[in-house]
Image (cartoon, rainbow, N blue to C red; front, side, top):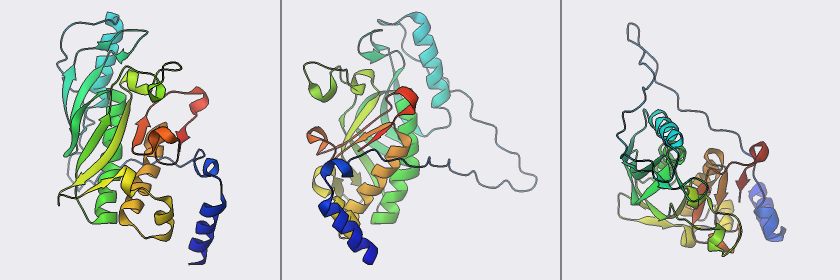
Length: 253
């Protein structure tokens, strides 16, 4: 109780910038495989998938397309993802990606609407949803996660929809915005309405604790995580991406 009061005091006195600073977290360990019984054959590593991508290279060099699509076959092998292979999006030096898929569901959880993404993002999403978000829904809320609502996936635009500045990771099909998560009982949790750092600290809201947990886990899976409290542009959703930065720099706000 004393610790909780101290944390609440800090929350009230610290400036918002301090609360939204970068958080360094340990990496999640992969799920352990079940033990092999005596005489049982150890399963072989998943082989690359046979994905039939649509023909054509779009605005990308043929070598880039072939490499990206082969990476997709390796990255998605053994994962429980329902998807549609897509032709290359955009062009080299501009928006898009040479290796694209349309994600429809991950580990039985619907992505609504389906999200255009590169395969590296799809792999990270799978691990986060299957190993973090679904278990958190069961443990924190006693509910089964059934749908993740996609507020924005691929979009050829600049950061925060600005007229100038750097291109967004959305423009590379390397980001996803999540506004709401739905459960099998017909209820849902809304990032804008249910997020509260204060309620997480004092334990007043199961939804707030659930959202806080999956946001912290997202900071391990992705290189950028933005949400309520980070800036005025992300107050109503979680933004997650796999931006590459110098020296492995990560942003968790």
